[in-house]
Image (tube, rainbow, N blue to C red; front, top):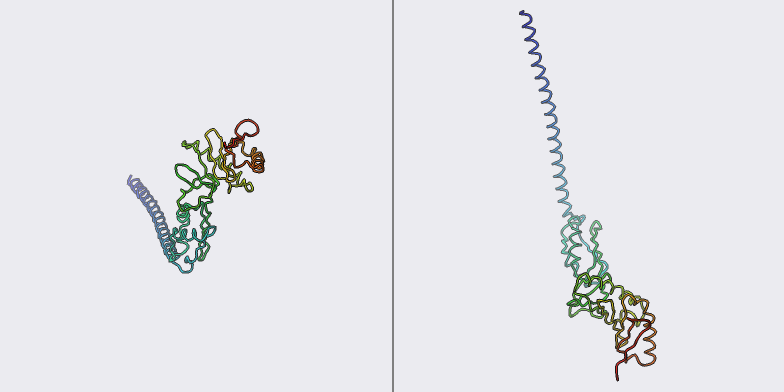
Length: 273
């Protein structure tokens, strides 16, 4: 009986020793894991600090410092204005230059259509700008320049060029006005492709009615030409022949209006007297 008690006591001791051994092993594994994790974190912190120090040095490094800026695609006057708008810091390196910020800032200039900016290491910043090119002037409450895409990009100031065709008659309704502008861009592009005197230089005004009737005013004739905007391209050669005939016969200065906006052929209205 006594022997059984001794053996039982030894079994209990063995079980307790086994549990303690397993717990100790788990503790060792966890300690090793946390030690490795701590070491990895320390290494990452040191590397990050190293990169920050290196980046800070590169931001002001003379080896890649911004020294030269090229502005391409525009005249000297606009180039000077864009350089002033860019507000570049020549004490910093090219790495410190924010290309998107410069692009966004320069495209605020009313005469700039688009801008591309790129770095050319070690010292050069290249700015490529596309200047807005007016196709016409639009009367929409005030006078605005319109480009070939139909965008009204700038109000016309008193000291700026006005030798462009003037578009009038646009609707006050936004959607309708947008449709009319698309029509007028096609009309203007048609004249843009023609030779003198039917080119844009001799087109003074284009007035578009809401029903699509187009009233054209040209510099070589006192009256107006009326035609449906959608039929202009097919009627243009007929217009040329008729105007040439009126010029040859000496009656062009008497013309009040030429109607191509109804029926076949054309009707000419003359001034009285």
